[in-house]
Image 1 (cartoon, rainbow over the protein chains, first blue to last red):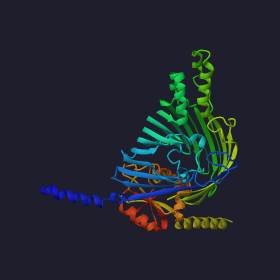
Image 2: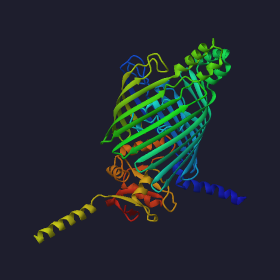
Image 3: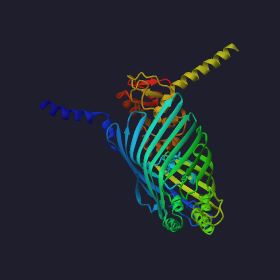
Image 4: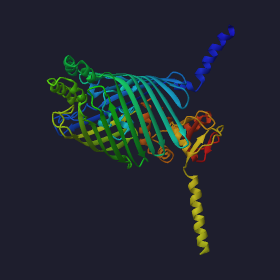
Length: 384
Length: 139
């Protein structure tokens, strides 16, 4: 008994003397993007209109992380985004457990790990663009509440990474909501010297609600409950596929990514998107070029069911199917030239000119109001 | 003719010898560390991709401040990219829960002190700062 009492304070002293004690302090890091932009047209495209805007892609973030013990750490990232009135949100909040030097588990809230730049999307300083290509990256799911498993190892000169995650997401989208449950993602990345490739698979049970959409579906249900249910996105399985490559020898780079999102049993058209980008690093300058495109302009679904209806109803059913799906069609591309200038080891200044082409006719689809336009942006990115 | 050639050779030798006496980036470890190290391993350790030496001992890299010319030389020659690219690389890892950049110190003396005290620490200094408390690595 006496011995135990003595041992306990002794071990405490030993702990406080160990080098790990230094790591017990809280680390504070942060980043900020200040972006200004203006479009040639009155109609909004990529978040910009002909009135100069300073908040759409501006954000400020602070990250706090503390070492709990030599295997565990806790991290919170509070992000305040200009397009959300600069209200502060916990975008990341997780506990990380290092199983060994190659494996770790993360539990809490983190970025859904589906894209090449998913995790670092907000950290403008970490890449050459002002913002990652919207055709690929503008999706109605962002943060996952769940767990993530990370594995990384070397096999000879190959660096291999595997990441799997499981969880749920819930997002507010202009006037409505998008959520997913039983979300599973798995990604694999292999790097050999300057070359890197990446593959990802994801799936989830999706729900999407917009007041107007729900009202039309309710009306349609009176005519055909089965078809209305087919159209409704109600715990419907969505599948995400993605592949990416990169060649970067630090003097120049070229990279690209291709993705597809398909929620078959729903009103939502299959979305296919890709981009290719290249740049040259010359001293402090990185001039670059990007072409990106999204094709979410698919055939109207479920029209084959129309034939089963009595002839006098067929035009109404076909018309309604079309009327509900058409507003979600989109097809556009963006071509961007720009440059990054490394002002300091933690500050980058960027400028870009983008040409936005809406491939659908005026008034058609989700971007019906967006005319072809030229968008000019400038940005300052900072990390600390 | 022969003399001239000899003179030129001597001169070259002089240059080479004096060159090595000048500032030279040198990777250092604790004298107790006998793990083999090559440029690729040092690169992996300083980019947080490798967290152990070959023997399985934990590796703790110590960096120099970005204000230091030696840091720029290390980033360019060993890591193969400039200091801004290295800091962009780390910003990606820091904010995604994948890693923490090496601790940064102000000068060679601080690197030598940390390396001499802990067999896990690896750093780099100017060869003119070398002391017996640390072991220089030939890359």
